Amino acid sequence: MEKVILEVTTRDPKVKVKELVRENIIPIEYYGRGIKNLSLQASYKTFRQAYKAAGSNTIIELVIDGKDRKTVLVHELQYDPMDDRVKHVDLINVRMDEEIKTHIPLRFTGVAPAVKELGGILTPVLDDIEVKCLPKDLVSDIEVSITSLIDLHSIIHVKDIKVPNGITVLNHAEDAVITVSAPREEKEETPVAAVAAAAPAAGAAAAPAAGVAAAPAPKK
Image (cartoon, rainbow, N blue to C red; front, side):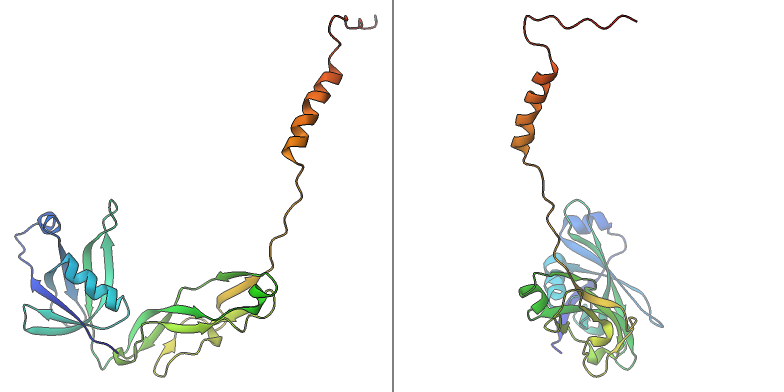
């Protein structure tokens, strides 16, 4: 597993978060079971580069003030609703000798015969799966081949996924991962032009001819 390094510095509690954001600096909280919480910070560019390489399921080596090193995972990101930029980060401490729970993205590969030959519609149900493993066994994604989807209404279940050694899947074995459904039938519609042309004709038949009085109603 490729090592991802994120260099951070201790955050001055007197400096407001708004001031950090204005300077393109992201506030970071580091915490975990049995350790002291730390308030940290990193430049926006530095964090984005590390997160692009690691995502939320790859171990990051955190270097604090150029000397103290920790192993962490990105636990939560907060985004600015105005511009969708990351405005706050939570990092959780990881012990290399303890199993962790996380989600690993699924990567679909191959061609489904039911789609190519029968025109079926492919519908992914899960984008990732929940797993338990030691940090050293984490992978960036898990490959799922869709070549087994031969017939319409075929399904790949969680139990069909091949996961690397050391990883335990926590989803229910019968959960659907990806499905194929029959193509939708197109309904035959009356051409708009024909309807428009028929409307005036029907109206003309109902109205009396120009210059001709309508027949009086019969007396009771």
